[in-house]
Amino acid sequence: MRENQGRQSLKRPHFIIIPPPFQGHINPSVQLTLKLASRGFTVTFVNTEFSHDQIRKSRKHLSNGEDDDDIFAGSRESGLDIRYRTVSDGFPLSFDRSLHRDQFVEGRIHVSPAHVDDLVGKLMGSDPPPRAWLPIPFQPGDPLLPGNMGLSMFHFGLNPL
Figure 1 (tube, rainbow, N blue to C red):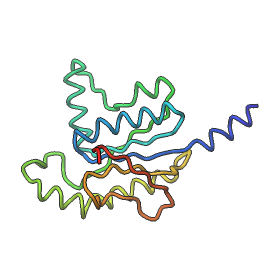
Figure 2 (cartoon, rainbow, N blue to C red):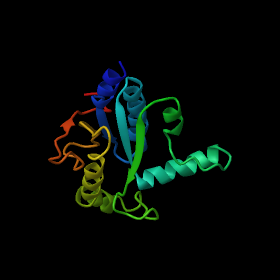
Figure 3 (cartoon, one colour):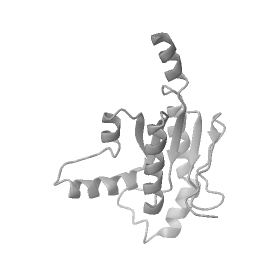
Figure 4 (cartoon, rainbow, N blue to C red):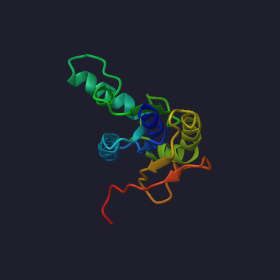
């Protein structure tokens, strides 16, 4: 019986979810992550370092100064297999993304994909290895789409068609 359980855990699908770094996309992506994990999937949620820093500051303010670095720590404690990673968007945390929106968008197109590819390459060595990528594009042709890493791709749209 135990051997069969081990084989089933090896077959557990592992998804990577990388939402665009905008508040209206991150929250639904977190909900999707929780839903998939509650159904037995392994999920790696990838946030930008900047979005992570903003969430961390907000959570620190709400939690009376305690530094709560991982938004899925409580979910893991309840048995869900959610992994949390951050990736650079190519800009320092001090860069004003709102003020320099054009430069930020150019960075998302030309710089961010290399950081994402590097992270996804590292995740391919995890156990279980990812099988699918759920990019959540914020515009048609979003540059953060899977390369040739053998991952299936599923789209999750946040806007009604």
